[in-house]
Length: 223
Image 1: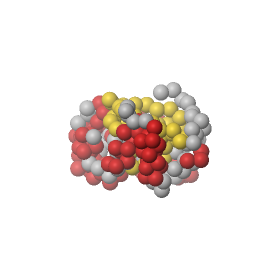
Image 2: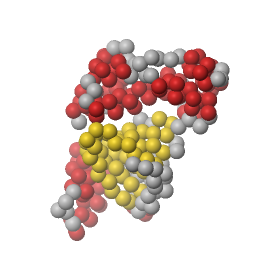
Image 3: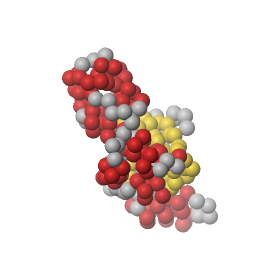
Image 4: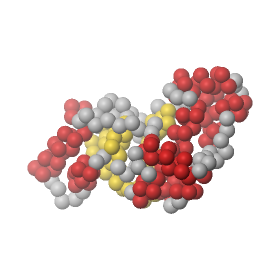
């Protein structure tokens, strides 16, 4: 979906498939069991992977239940059913208003820790990030990508911390998880997902994926 913005705040619940959302500040993944929050006026674009089903709700400034910054929030079983019912057919009038009231109540106070990939601004850092992502199966050291980006290891290490808020190993781990969340939509098995994204063993991949996303790769793939 081409880059665009909305006059209202938007909540995007993904009941199947995966959606990657990108803004000027970075990108994040919204998959089953979560919803993306995009505040009004924020330029963004979506890319869907797999057989994606989206449910979108708009909110005015006065009723905005979530922060003024983009976020990913967890969607439990009750909120999931509410969102599907609200955006489905056959509901109108007083019942629709009642559903919206309950949805707003469930959303207030919701918080999320999105798998955010911050956008690099410095050209040297952006080049280094592209080099690292080009082939995740081959782990490149900070020294190697620094050479490719035409800068020093020390400078590049500083840029990762100052611009992206994390070290190079932390950023690379996040990138690998980001891609591992997309692979299942193309039917890629767990074992292949692990190796193609640079994990030495499947068990190490499962441990990292579960710790970051809150569910195992197998369960995520079934969802």
